[in-house]
Image: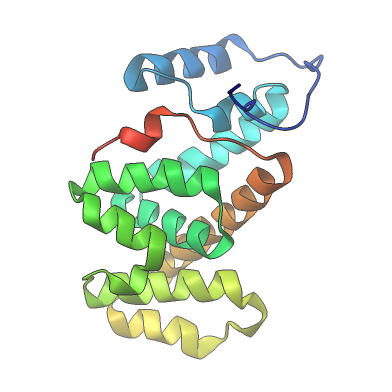
Length: 190
């Protein structure tokens, strides 16, 4: 059985090849993880698109926030579950398992986040991210107030919404180009 390509599109190398700094970014990923995530390889055909994706990802997932890195990964999984995004469920499910040290939590978030034992803040956060994914036109002040009532600040609500919005975009790109997860993610932190 032949392995599926990383993406279904055969993208030509752009005249805007990766910069030395961008290539170093890929090299560091390979050194730290032992592989280059396919999401990065999918954007590597064009330096401007690669830069936009990595800048957004790094700001939202690694930047300063009152929303922990684990909680941001949890949002990624819940949004991706609602969107049935194979790539992101596999990659970010692995991240949740690894960061939490809890393989069960990772699987619960993939299948149905409501089955997980979460504190009040995390439950409100994931309820909001899910609602923003499945009924964005209906989000209103009572939805934001539920987050405030659970203990989230307006700045943190911004971050929760930004992470959810980013993964909705990323899920749609993954579906559109049939992006495949790296095999390594499947066995991580199990």
